[in-house]
Length: 306
Image (cartoon, rainbow, N blue to C red; front, side, top):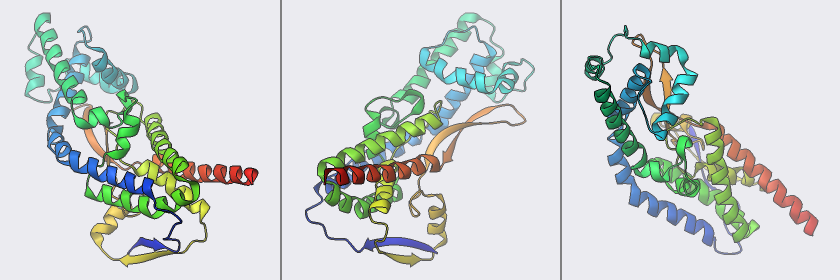
């Protein structure tokens, strides 16, 4: 059984929620402009994972080879955090993982090994830097200043977008009416950026892009709960196993929020790099707390002024 909020008592404001409408429109427009491109680029995930794996294997087997700065930032944390796995990967007695691994062990010429490293490095940079999510999503390992803004307007799917926009509407327009448009707009953008930075602190070496307005929306929800603690909220009960599964994984109760990040898993064949879907509860909890503190600070300022 799932409770979905539909409306609350204060659904009418003193003025039109122009900022909220604008934010919702921007999120929808960006989603429609990028969704199919992101899906097409996601089809390359298996190839990207293979390039990462081979890059790590070659760097472990031949540490004397030269690699670029971007590749070094990817490889060094693995060697530092997982020394036992790294030692296993560098062992000549290790069982080959695939045909490439078996063939590269037959190569002894330094020039050929360096050429293969250069080829893998070029493919690595193409995969990591030329995709839409790499450029505009928030990637903790090599994030850019613009990604603190752009990542908040990218979404991973329809359910992700609809859930965020619904909660943005329910909590946002009434806060805009009470705070004023300028404070509300600044708070929304700032909360989204802070949530992304908190995610970066939690997973500093992650190459998985973080995206979505969930951080900013969670902060609005926290402020809403403090500002209107006794406001009645109308809900509807839905009984659906599929929606229940989504609710169990979503930060807002109905939003299926998946963020792709990389993790290491040991296996009988050694350490393997692979992509994993992860539901990031901690950044959302942090955003919720940020929103409550923001509303309390705003309330204290208002009391001092009055």
